[in-house]
Image 1 (cartoon, rainbow, N blue to C red):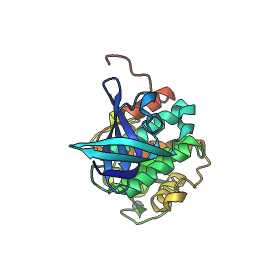
Image 2: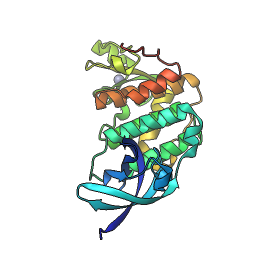
Image 3: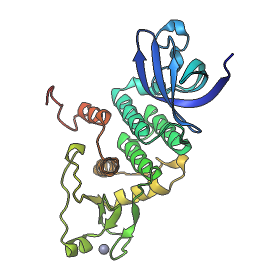
Length: 275
Ligand SMILES: [Zn+2]
């Protein structure tokens, strides 16, 4: 009789196999990403329906057979039902999970990443903060967890800490003030979306409240990550756009789920078939 094991994890990807079976990619604290095979996972008969849905955080009982981890049963801990009440929430969750998939590995512990993801899904599913705020905080924090934390202490040249405006040099992960930038003869990046990301120097124009929000997100305790205020709507948008550019530039590509999220919100034109 195979030894049963149990682990808590969040389903970040599913893939159906044949008519009945489903592979679940689960993010766990101790083992990073792992794959569970839910036999009959697509049908009600399997009895596993409640723990084989995307974005379900559950305790999974499984056993090993050959190379596979076969799901025996599971108990939902947090199903994040609020996500399915709204398409924007679902799409944002899909993006978070796609990023987490990309930045995790099998067998590599991912406690901080899992915690960030759970906190972010919780905030999105309950609509606790504006989505730009949750998205931006997730992006800057996940970049930091992956070793890409920007140095936001002050201008890298003159060390000035504050100012109405600072520029974030994305690939160098450092700030530069307008005075030092014009001395250096730098140009300002004006591109808008992930497709336009280039290897070239990317300079993001950050108003003071956005710099403050980013600094907060890098230093805040995990359970207080979203508890900052960006009162101005324009600042919220700049914050979210900047953290996105920062994260995607360091990962090196965009995400389908993000494009979809932006399209449905009318933030970018709908991508036509065959284009
Ligand atoms: Zn300076």
